[in-house]
Image (cartoon, rainbow, N blue to C red; front, side):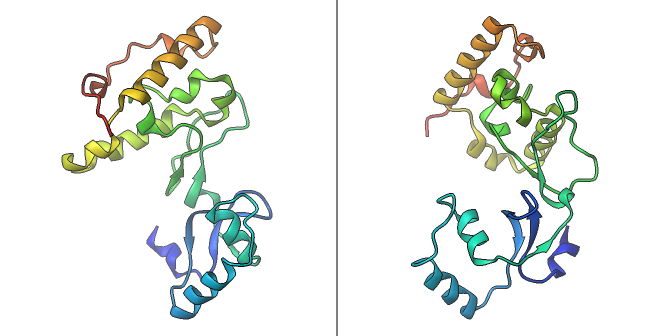
Length: 182
């Protein structure tokens, strides 16, 4: 991934053919750039109220990176939810892996979230988690509130008998026995 940081300012992966995603991008830091962004923050209105909208308004010309550098986890095809092997980074859309049980991507529990569901992307995140120092695991702890939300949507998925059947899986995530209060 380091090889992409030789690209000029501003380089990013597109959300579509016009706008870029600000999740991973190259901006050349300088006092001048900082001052310019600060000045523009008073007058430029973000189209979505966030940093991405602001940056797209400021940087109207940008260099396009290949999609695999910041792979947006959204699947248009109903049957294809595999993450390509050659991606450098995954931009998790929908419910994030740490907000779900590690056993499966809980985006499967909500029909309107199915485009964001991918067990392969979910597994990859947990592989990175497992490689982190244990002292950092607590930051990805499962709160009582998140656990209640997961259980609620699993029950709804079961009542609706959602076709993918993820709600049938036996959950073994050890975090459900060590809920944290943040």
